[in-house]
Image 1 (cartoon, rainbow, N blue to C red):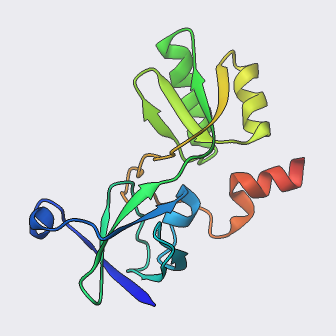
Image 2 (cartoon, helix red, strand yellow; image 1 turned 90 degrees about the horizontal axis):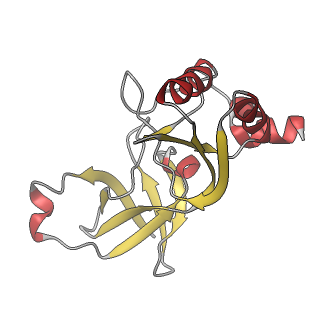
Length: 165
């Protein structure tokens, strides 16, 4: 099994390298530093990264044997949020941030993992929501690395869905 142990900086040593394979993962799995995975080629591999590592689409990882894999953000169930005014969208971002919801912020839109309870709140605030499958790359947060304040899975959108629906 291939063990990927470090993220490499593409602007430095990777300029002369090409990825040997790809690793396609949704955001919830890109937050795990220890994980068994299957590469796009079908090869089995393991992530053995520093604790707290959050992978982003486009990151490159290097294995103990020198091979390189490119991380790809998988399509996953997300909700895109738009509003009639920038102020209304900022209001939605405030309410989602107050709930520590990971958000991807675009020019005039927000993206979050699908959650019917949050969707109902957003629609109640006058937002327009569209469910789709797309890559999810939330903001890293004020302290970097995508830190969350909870320490268990009960606050993840999938857990809220199980409890509420």
